[in-house]
Image (cartoon, rainbow, N blue to C red; front, side):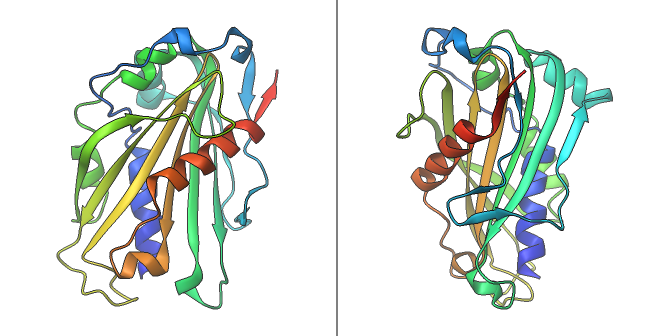
Length: 227
């Protein structure tokens, strides 16, 4: 149903390795040297979202094409780390919200390049893995500086998913969903944060991009550990 669809979509976004930000104004002068030498260790919770015990953290070295992609984007010796969080009641799916963190850590030689870098086929990859739904980027990427976020770069953009098979019911899901994605980069970590409001999605309402950026900032501050 919808919850599965929402998490499939979010994972599809992440699986595409969303380095889709094209033109960039981000510069490494905004990245603090003190951000070197951290690994990504997803926090147990953020606000009212708790890690979903049924969804094990993804961790370990990247291999194959994923490794090549991350290295091409500017992450040396990339390791992956990620977690899925949820809030609301399992008994009432309409109260549930999902939050996904997927990231990489290693030696990020050029954070601005990573966050400005564009994988031109990201939309195509996402469409391929989103079960026939059409995925497109909305508007332009936006550089953001949420409260308490300092010494790193963050950029957000909305994704729109249009599903012709949907009918707006809980079983089949909404015809159209807007999902904000926020990405941060510093000298040792890159994190992608995606949030889905299950009940809101049925009526076509997503979580506000600013709210996702605020959650991403909190995860940034709680999900890095000095090596």
